Length: 407
Ligand code: GLC
Image 1 (cartoon, protein in one colour):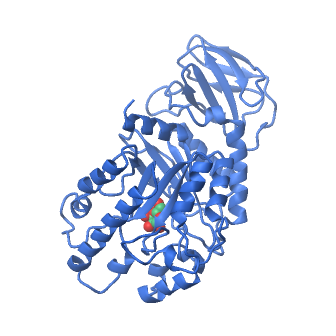
Image 2 (tube, helix red, strand yellow):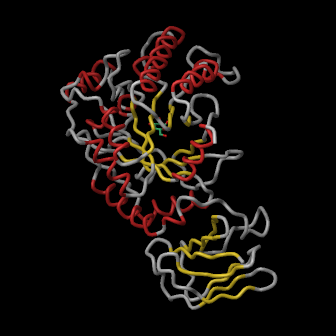
Image 3 (spheres, helix red, strand yellow):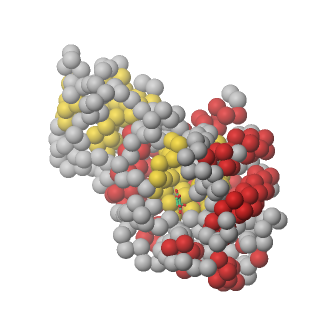
């Protein structure tokens, strides 16, 4: 298997990841867009660096929480739109070494990921508000912003050993006419940039936010999960606040929190389409993950550990869909498969009996995944499968999985 194929296989089976938005904005606690939304001048914003002094063990905390909740990789904002680097950047002094903390959080994060056997993802924002919100003419600041990004990406790809994922964000194309085709790729010279990245990190997987598709597509902040068209690999990222416009970075109030049930349901629909699920956490300036987010991670992790077989190495299946327009499975559940094993996720509970109107293969056994207890079933020659003798109420608070084998 070549580098790329092996990495893609790893990503597919990893299925679950943790996204971490953490930076100077975490001090203010009004989300990662606070500099822009509250109109804070760059100089005033930069003085937050004097207050940056988190607890020393933050990356260890995040990675332990990620591993315990069944996540296989973590993506950290090494630098967000504000331009503040969480790493020792020789290219720009606006970084976490020049703060009271004097620490390279990217180095600590990488070490913690390795300790917990987690894939390592670097988020890097191409746009930098220190340039884009200045009064200067676009054609002037564009070149300086691009030169800095090239150099910092080179630093990130050189100084921390093997990196699994490069997660670009915030692409813009200053000075390029809006009507020009592929303007983002033109401005960033994305092919050149990504070729340089790959020459330093031959195994790396790159997302779709540098103006060209690269290795995987990203969905963002959607409440209805549907796989992107023509995409082999994809990932849905979401915040734990239940609002498409909500914050990824720390928000002191977080008035609109998702529940564990909602989060697990979003994960289930991602699994249905064999995508990856990247759950965002927003640690406070001290580095600590808010308790309400830890509770959700705990519930999600328990479910994942108990149903691991139906989470990681599964594939999409059309086995229970009559035609491309019809629903897959039935009113209470959907299917995925792994070789000759089928998984049926009952995300609502039908009661003592459930009928799946279309199933293209003959079923040999039906069991509860969690307990192994077998269930009675009958199948018509047309394929309809009826499972009976189930309890009246759902055995699992979030979703009960049945495991079937095909004949
Ligand atoms: C957006 C936002 C950003 C967030 C990201 C996550 O592009 O600008 O704040 O980091 O999406 O997908």
